[in-house]
Length: 151
Image 1: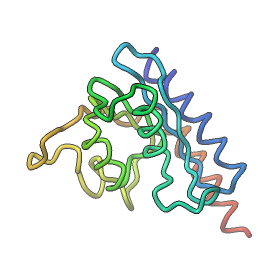
Image 2 (image 1 turned 30 degrees about the horizontal axis):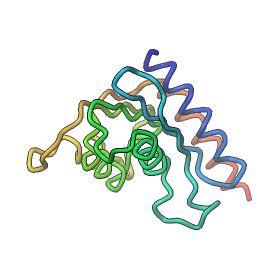
Image 3 (image 1 turned 180 degrees about the vertical axis):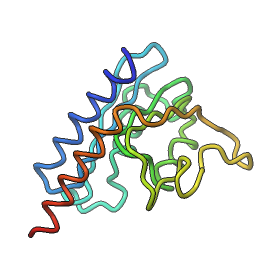
Image 4 (image 1 turned 120 degrees about the horizontal axis):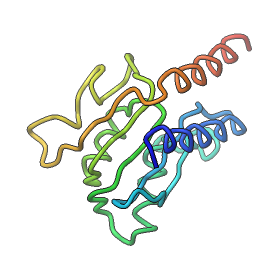
């Protein structure tokens, strides 16, 4: 599976979040062999959960699926650059790689505003692949927020 293929799955998850009024962000986790082991989308509105970010949902599901909180060798694919909470969760889960679509200049913690995943003070630093299908991810978010402003 290519990064584009995996990002398309994450984009499908993001679109699913629209049905609950959540910000359309989606994530998938691939195991070390490249198989999808978990999916997640924003559920903050749907579940009233401030930690209900797509990445956290997907990481929790991956840990359950693999029976292990250490996601060594796994790849987290997400449509938007992770925030500090989600970047920290990726580090703590020991994911091997974070792949994201759109940059988040306001809250991104994988290079834009902060760079949590590459902080040498931490005990784990995942590889980062940025900008995969960024235009599609950005367009989905822009359309969502344009609709919110018109309400």
